[in-house]
Length: 275
Length: 275
Image (tube, rainbow over all chains, first blue to last red):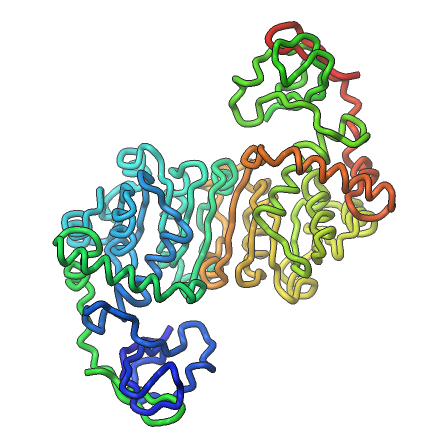
């Protein structure tokens, strides 16, 4: 996965990308880029008009109103389908995606239990982002914690880690539980064949659990609406200084990047970094 | 899971179950049963009117037009959602459920690759039931077989086994592949926590695979239509002596049971076995 950047169109023959307009470019971090947007078909390769950020800094299009925000938004809403009153578990809850998942779940009226890997993150997601419960997964016994703090059973699990963590959450799910697999960081360094994990097929059957992996390009046609909603939630937060989405808190761990986005030469589309 | 039986109502105060009518009773194998059908809420516990079998022997309501037929029907059609031209893999394809899954997938215009555990079953599902390819899973290397006989990739997997078999099929799936988990016979004798398996979370994410367990009670409101369709397919097969559903072939491995279904004493519903 290459880096993305906010860039400015220097020369263009493409009607969707007028010269002077800004774009989100999934092309790596470059000074200058020449590309034909309509021909970029690979996953996470492409150039899109900068979404309407409703006055937020452009850098938000690389984070909470960009790919990580969209992953949280679509994975939670499309696959976990949380209803008000549901219990939602989030792993890597202090991460760029997980921190937003928990906040969106709160907006939807859910009880949210988050797990992160440092006490600082745990404090942040609980005290500033409004997670109902948060724990340092390195220091707790997951099964016991779920039996105590999600005693009513888990309805939705936003999975960023896979493996034994996912097994334990699955065992604590309710009938018709939904798992969105966004990532599986516990398995990335291993050959899946050699990295054997507990997996409870029987729970999957008897509880009729649905587990689904996703990439956000699948809902490309809905990105515009999603980014508008994300930007709107951030504004509401800034106005209220409480949930919806915490841009300030988000900025603390994921600072609006001071990346210097680079320019690029003509034909069909030429974009350069935005300072 | 207790056994089911076809029974006759001897005494009844329940308007849906007139005296003399026949029922499918999920109550175990009994001579006489007294029960209140509306109060039987447990999974696989209940009494239902005998479905319209369109002239087939009553015993079909315990098999291809009963629970195993419904498992094949709903698991495949609701969760795998096969489209004409899709490639469908079935494990335990010589079983009461799997043998029907493959036949329904053929009716839907799919390519079907089945795996069973004896050469006799393999011959049967290929030569009599019309599976496109069939293999004895004990004698082949699954990954190589799929790469050769499902080289276009697997779209649907009807899973009865779980574990390493499921891992290997998942690795050979196409984007947006669908897995219906009906059972997990490879894991039934083990504590899931100790029985570690390979599970490829990365394939789940990058191929956006959906995996879902199910119980047929979930589609209870559609049982009537489903049993009518299954009975209809069996009749079409008997008329054509080729697919749709092979009742004769099915009968060879799963003979219409000569069980002697038992009677039972009055109040609110009294049913007895049908001879």
